Image (cartoon, rainbow, N blue to C red; front, side):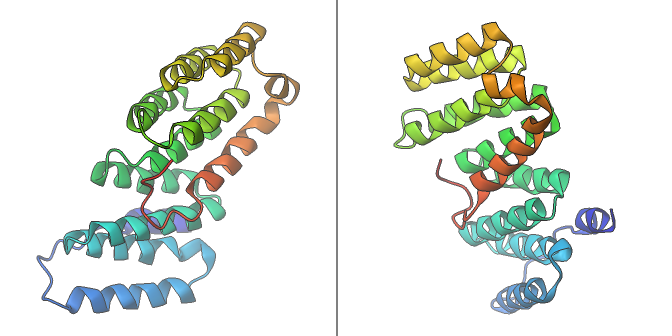
Length: 213
């Protein structure tokens, strides 16, 4: 809880534009602070470093720091704080499909099905027509495999149709008619942890701020 509260005390510095070169030094200091900190407290300096880079106009570097903050938060089990920084990435880069994928997995892990449906829609819209459609299709199929929620299964099947994977869409509709995939029906209690692990995997190594699938 203490780590969670410290996270939400971290806010962008509103003291005005930084002098040339000063913000880079502050970012280096925050990087060093993150390396020294225990895992539970690493996200705060990484988040602040991202804020500084964003204010200085270095968006790619900001997205990289925010992505690393998500990694550390997920590894420490701070799901809601990870969701907060992921939403920050989406505000900066609305078509960051990797981050949209991570958010959808986090929604499923927390059983926030209404937002899961919204993020699934945005994820598919962002990736449609790109070279990442197959990777996205695999993600959506695994999402459908992990839930028993009827509306999400219908949406996942429609998403697969949009991406051009009609046979997979048909499989998901079969799962929907049966009340979920065999795995989801056999081990319903294990699905939340599975979704969290998938969220961690979908965000791992996203140094580019989450622009790929």
